[in-house]
Every structure is written in structure tokens, then in C-alpha cells.
Image 1 (tube, rainbow, N blue to C red):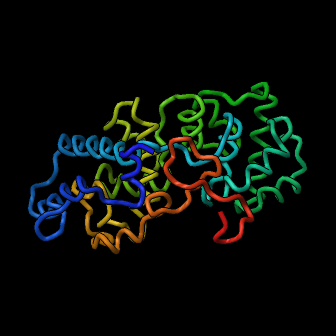
Image 2: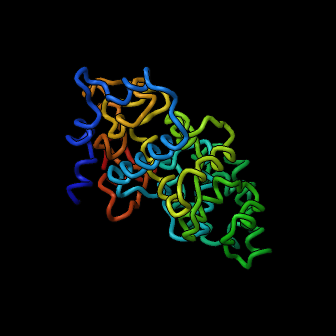
Length: 296
């Protein structure tokens, strides 16, 4: 593990971040100035947003899709299953799923009740089973069993919307895309990059701030940060490495020691969501489904 990666694991914020984020009273200087400063201009917001992206890249040099997959079909299926559940639960479920149904042809021919039983741990298993059989049938009949590599084609598949399509395009085909999930939407609004609520409008506005080449990795960094530090109900503001750039500093716990206890996954010294994480991931792999609590 490189020094940069090591500093990001369970040791937030770094000395550099503390220096940048702390004022004399322990609050980020930018947070104090925001109360009295004039409204931020569009140009200033874009510059701040791009700086936040650069600093997030330093914090999460290992950011990656948190679904286990070996090919576009597995990523497509896993992404559909990830609705209304965690990537961890999906990753714990897909080994058995792909062992039983390794190809679109196999899944298209699945007995619905049997498929439902395999994916039951992910929740909403009846609706998801219908989507999986439907998209697999479409892949078999319309695309020769291959996942298409365009947004236009992907969104015609049952259960596949823009978010799922962008995940597949960005991570299986190398086509830049923004993944506007709940974490992404929450953070970009909290950071005042947009005030839009509709995912497509959020996607359009954020796409205007960053070059296309940054879209996929920007998505990973924001989602990583939302899952590990900038939580929905109680952000770990006092342990946030980009607090000095955040206009919403103070919405969460500002005491560094208390905030540190709120960190999740590798940032808090716990396992991640993938059973088979990338080689450069600095945390622990997640345990398989059914592993007893506390077992490694």
C-alpha cells in the first residue's frame, strides 16, 4: 500500500487536511467566510467543484465500482439488483446467481420461481427477476447474447434506466458517464453544485461543470465519499478531508474524534463492499453471504 493510500485509511483527516480545514476556533475558514461573503459566482463554484474533485482524487486514488463483476453482463445484472439494497448484499448474492445462470441465454430460460429464490436476499426479488429475465431475453433475441455498448440501446432493456446504463458504459466499456444515485445527488446538492432534484437534470448540470473525461471517476469519488464520510443523516464533518471547500460544513459532527467514529468501510478500518476488490484497494474484502458475525 502506498503512503497516499495508507493515509486515507482510518486516519482522516490527514495533517495536510487539518491544516487546510482548521481555523483558530476549529472550524474551516471557508465555512466561516460563507456566512458573511457575497453569493458565490458561477465561475467560483465551478473552480471550487473542480478543486474538490482533484482533492477527492487524492483521498480516493483507489475509487472503483463497488459491484463485483467479470464482464458487461455481470455488471448489468448486478446493477439492476442493486436497486433498493446495498452493493455488499448484491456482491454476496451474485456468486451463486452467476454459477447457476452464467449467460444471458441461461438467465432468459430461468424458471422465475427459482431465479427469485436465488436473488431473494437483494429484496424486491419478484420485480427484479422479471427484469433480469426480460433483459436477458432481449440480449439473446436482439443483441446475439451481447450487452450493447450504447446508451440508446441499453435503456431499451427491461429494468435499465440512465443510471444503470451509465454504470455499465463507464465501467465495462470505458464510455464516460455520470452515475446519479442517491449519494451522488445528495452530495452535489450539499456542495451547492446544483439545486436540482431530478436525476436527469442533476446529470445535465454536473456534466456542464466537468470535462467528459472526468465523469466516470468523478462518480466513483463522490459515491465513495458519500458512503464513507458525507452520510445522509450525520455527516462526519470533523473528519472530512474536503471540509475547507464545503459550504455545508457543520451539518454533521464537527468534533474530529467523534466524527472519526462515524467513518465507514476502509476509512473506518472495516471491510468494504466487494468480495473481490481491485488489487489497489486498501481495505479488507467483504465476507461471503452467511459468514458469522465477526468472522473473517
